[in-house]
Length: 126
Image 1 (tube, helix red, strand yellow):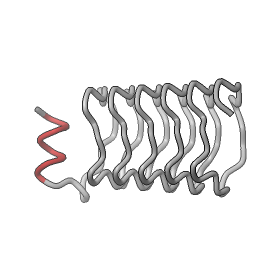
Image 2: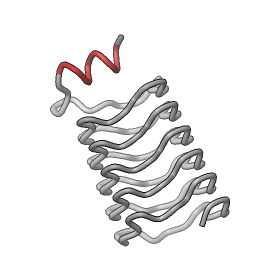
Image 3: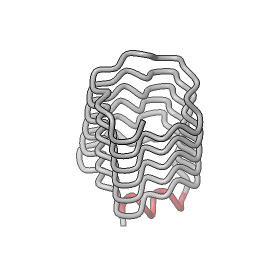
């Protein structure tokens, strides 16, 4: 489904593990509670998308536009968020262990509190 326009899509709680959504428009989509393990969302437009409580373990979100996205409580362990735009995104209660945040824009985002370890704090605030 690369390069598709799926803006406004409402299909929460589905298993799309390994799917390819690179360069796809998912603006305002609702995928809350979905299993998106290993999904490729590189360079996807996910502004204001609802990905709360989703499993995005090992997902590729590099260069993705996630402005004002809802990622509350999502599992982002080992996800690649390099150069992603997360301005204004809600990452509260998200699990970011071993996630790649190199070059990620987190300006104005709500970042996780309880799961932060020293390494993550260093990445986010250095």
